[in-house]
Length: 118
Image 1 (cartoon, rainbow, N blue to C red):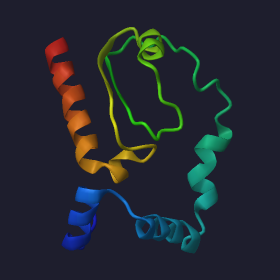
Image 2: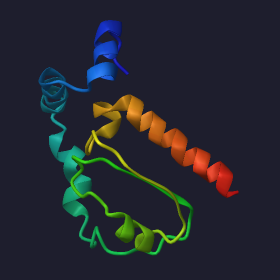
Image 3: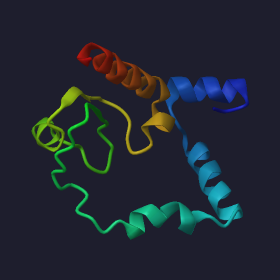
Image 4: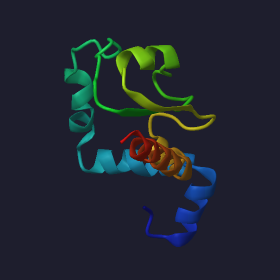
């Protein structure tokens, strides 16, 4: 998390601001690493939204500003052992950064469902 307590408190309460995004972009720019950070997206040639049939217990949190908002019906087909599903009202692709407290709550809820599953 952020080293400056005042900034960390603001991020926890309000989410990220434009300056936070600029700081992140600057870090990639100055270290000359934007290409390597996007390599995973570029090289992934598999059908991303194809039904996978994953048999492990799975918890899914859907954030509204994500690239793809997985509908529950698709999620149940892709993950037949779905133990937790929740659709949130805030957050996106970088939910841990944008909505850290909600993200932590979702992790806890997912693991809580896993403990009940056993």
